[in-house]
Image (tube, rainbow, N blue to C red; front, side, top):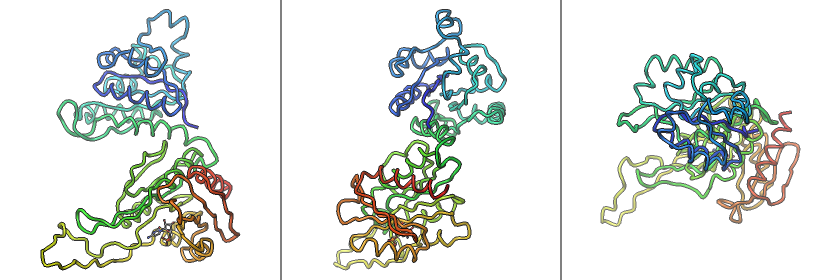
Length: 396
Ligand code: C5P
């Protein structure tokens, strides 16, 4: 399960304002947060802000006797499921690596028996400095999860690695840190494709389809909740990455094929993407123009690789390969033919004659060599849960 109780230590850097957003995200996802604000952190955000967002008292000093009576600092450090240091400044990480305990935050970090995650944010030179890199290596070697900072423009005007990752990415790492340990799919790697592909005709036009990606994203979320390590290879869709899922964005079928190959080995592959069967044979390097003669440019198509069929016949084929089949008629017969043609173990056939593509519910039939199981119409996340249950049973 996801860590429910987070002890959040807010260090002193300009990125501290993003810790406020992180508190909101943890709360929104059903977690509890208790904040500890360092003296440096208090120069950037106030205890009042963190208290209001977390709906919990904020702790700032080791010498607060009232707190020491009500709650010892040792107890505070152990009440959480996970301790998150965000932003983790160069100074805080140096103290953590050296075992210095000279304020409330560092004392808690030394006293805790819970997993610790540090989310660094600092100037690019400070991040790249040998001392910081040494401290990060020491922390990682002693079991602290140190996230990599983002690369980009910094508040100080420089450019490079050192930016705090976006709060959504931090939340995903937090959720993943818990989900990887328990559940019927723990220890398993599930590879999922989802969404449409876009096949360029020229730099501004493309061939696409109506796939929303909702079903594949729902399966990714359900698999992560069941404890799997999930790699989601997503075509262009505007959906949030489910907690605990590692997402790789691609645009074309050929990029998706390469990403699937690079993500192997996996225990299970669930190919939900509506991959374009054809692409423009020669995508124009410049925008195609009307030339005034009324002549229509020809559109020659080339066949895309069949990712599912290739994977099902690959030497490093996952032990369980599942394909989807979107059909508008003779659903089961087409799915049975597809099972053999693609070399998949299961085909999940769905009736797309209604508004399934983009809609919230789905009616599916799970077709295997052993027979057909038809599920009633249900929301896409219920379909996902049902499928993940069957996957867990099959792997058992
Ligand atoms: O042949 P059809 O497109 O109906 O097959 C659907 C199944 O095959 C889905 O699982 C889809 O993700 C997969 N597929 C693929 N690569 C393609 C075409 C389809 O992986 N080029």
